[in-house]
Length: 302
Ligand SMILES: NC(=O)c1ccc[n+]([C@@H]2O[C@H](COP(=O)([O-])OP(=O)(O)OC[C@H]3O[C@@H](n4cnc5c(N)ncnc54)[C@H](OP(=O)(O)O)[C@@H]3O)[C@@H](O)[C@H]2O)c1
Image (cartoon, rainbow, N blue to C red; front, side, top):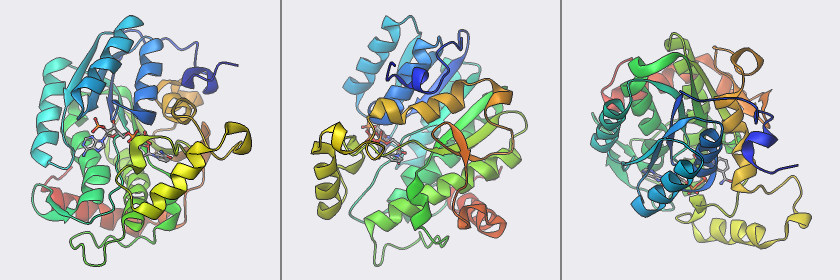
């Protein structure tokens, strides 16, 4: 069987012609593979990232399969850049049918960055506040029958639901990453309640130790994922995924027939199926507190 995401997800026969997909973090890894899968299914693409050369290579690959594709750059650690990216998307296309929030990072050093109305720790800002901001800025152009996909992680389970992100005292990069991924799961459900029309969902895509995600992680984390990435696939069945394999669930959430796949009320998915997130990810009070915090830090109300 082909190992491309659309085949693995069972959506290779879906026709996305006439649909426009915006995929953040599409210059490498899981976002890149998701973007190219959607292009092969017929969607036109906005490819987001920071590295222009990598973005242009994805655009060229998408054009090779007949997609209309454009690269738009923005640093998600900068809210002004996120707003500029949203404006550029709106200038490029009147409608966003599929918004896949895949951009993400893991930082070993703690740094506070501007979030629009206040400052917060950078992992939280890039991984959560940027998709919060972008989705808010694009909400009126996301199609009523569209999809918003948030690429989270099963590592959200390691987070306890406290979001002390205004300080970097005692910063721990791995804990900050897990916290940001819990925010992704909570955000998808909270946005689903607030967006009339488009379906919203989060997912764990898989474990890809060979992706660029870990390049700014601490030395122990880099050593551990580097060792796993170096092992032959036969020694790591079901543990390690390629980026294409990990793109299957985001591709499925974006492309599958609506009723057969995601329901409008949010949800968390693993291996192209609904899955149970952690207890804290289902806690209404934690979800609403995170929402209030996100509005306060960004200065954006929904
Ligand atoms: N790898 C895994 O095992 C794994 C597991 C579970 C979940 N995930 C999630 O999957 C998503 C994709 O990760 P990946 O493994 O594919 O990593 P990756 O190969 O490093 O890709 C990350 C993407 O995010 C973009 N990005 C990073 N920092 C950015 C910033 N400050 N501003 C704008 N764009 C930025 C990168 O763009 P540029 O390089 O152009 O800046 C790149 O396109 C992330 O949300 C991650 O949390 C990954």
